[in-house]
Amino acid sequence: QRNQLYRFKDELHKLERQQQTLMEELDGPQLSIPEQREMLLKRVKSDNAEIADIERRVAETQDALRKGRAQLAQLKTDASAAVDPKVQKHQELFQRDKEMSELIKTFDEKKKEEVEKVAKAQAEIVRLLGSVSRKSEFLDNSSGLSTSKLTEIKADLDFKQMQMDNSTTTSSRLNQELEKRKVELDKINTLDQKISTELTQLQDKMRTMKEELGVFSDLKTVKALSADQRETIANSLHKAKAAAARAKEKSAELKKRYEEVKLKLSGDETHGALEELEQKMRHLEQTVFLLAEYIDTKGAETEYRPVADECMNVLSLINQETVSVLAEQPVFAMPGY
Image (cartoon, rainbow, N blue to C red; front, side, top):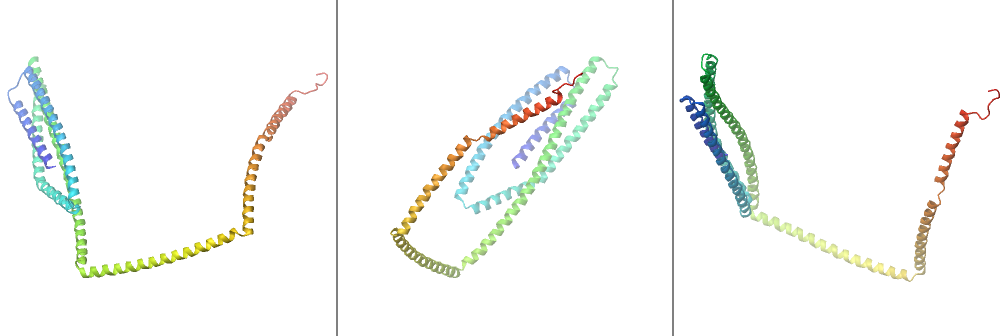
């Protein structure tokens, strides 16, 4: 941001020099229309060359900026991998606070300079407007002048009007730059508040760490607590191993009983009969399922109700048509009619 302020200051100096040149041209001897046209063409060519040079420098600056950002990102990555994160964070905050403090100290002075320059440019614009107004009045009252002289004066007036418009544009740009600087100042103030908040959080964290350090500095107490915790963990581990051994013994006993019952059932006649009945039931259930599926399929193939309903609907329509025809034309005609 400080570099941007310096760059804007240089641009402002260039604009002031251009304005001074224009003022000297306005106050100097008047040129003829061809000479003014030639001068304008030269200035346009010069401005185009300057614009091309500025665009080239902007492209080079952007390229260098991209490379610098890539190098900065790589350096930050290397630094974060090599340095303690807490120390790195503290260094970054300290450096940022230093830069912001320097920028805030010099901002009011630079802002005052920019405001004074804008005021001077506005005063110069007012002076030029007065000059143009006086020349316009002169043109309005110059009915006795010759046509060529009047044309030359009008061309000179148009040229000075164009210069005045350029000065107005310069003043507008300066006002825009001033607004940008105000926005940047607001951002700086917000960043300052954010840095203060982060510093407060770091101070709280350092206070907590100092308290913890005070606790851990008493090695005897720490060792005693550690010994108690180890003893408690050892007792819990012993109890868990004993419970696991008891569970293992109980599981082995239950497995043994299961094998005995299984062996006993394998030689029992009732158990064998039950297994045979269970197999028969599974076979019968499978047969019932197949028969039910077969019945449903055949029932769908031999379903007559939809056809019967359709026939009844057709018969009903025929009866309705017959009744309507008989109602309109009597079957027997009366004699004499």
